Image (cartoon, rainbow, N blue to C red):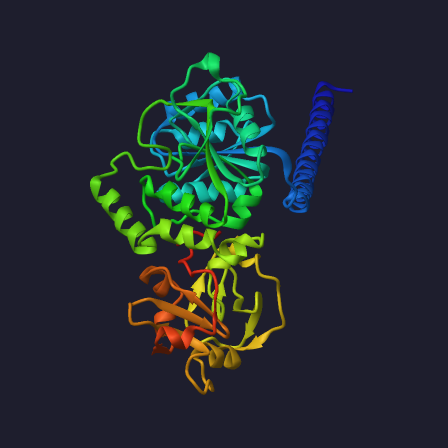
Length: 433
């Protein structure tokens, strides 16, 4: 074999080897893509199947906004001082200080949600509660640092009485006194929301925070009132300590102004007028005294149309939700999915029949369905043999009750009707929940 023939043979061998390696590499790439797609499919299916499952532990929801250093300290303190089973969920309220990058690199150690815009403290907390999988939930702001036994002591307090709705720690307490002791547990009318512990069951009964508030203590005050309306107590656990290391709070804007506080104050007053009067009325109501379970929807009117964040619209009556078939031409109130699920499903109803009932058509005395107005200015929603006082103009507007037929009546005309629980405005939601 000549030199030229030998070189040609060598080139052919190299070319065949390259072709063989190229084919092998292509097969590997194809196998990788197929395996990746199948693994992703199985992962999604596993997630769907296990989505409703909870774990016997605490979901720690941390709301943050432009407080990266404080957030790191907060998470490090949780890792150092938390003995009970927990998961961490961080909701970043559109920070611009590198928080999003930090959270992306920390995937696997915690779950996170990076908001596309600033949604206020309520919006951040709501997003975190929607993600929570624990049987108990802690809501925390990123400027909080925890200490020894903080969660264990709060859990002992919460589990000491089924009537306790929420527990908060103290911010200044000697660490060597931070041990279980029932004597420092103190009931209160309101809790500050830098750190709140409650059962998941309470979240399912009370619902989400009101996103109509921007960033202020009224966020916490409003939720405290709603929890107390359910007949639950608020307790400060003086044997649990966390530290506030500065700032306005996770989820709050760094440039929060007095204008925001004024907005939230007026919004609070418009919703409640005198909230403690309503708490007293509800606590003395027969529903509470008879031990009936009270949830958020217990304070929502019947004979109204509601919609969650889906396409279906429901008619509420006799403690059921009935899907409305056809085009609805009367007002609809948007509520959360967690509230919507509180009503069992009844038989469908036509849009025509639902509207007839909403407008009170065919009622011979004009009082079976509509608003009864008393001389003192009080307004009641009439639901058959039951009348229910409307707490505020905000509640009237939220449920579009001001558009229903109304009638000026005397106290005597309402004497034979039982008084139900008052009607409050649902929380305003600005995101799908």
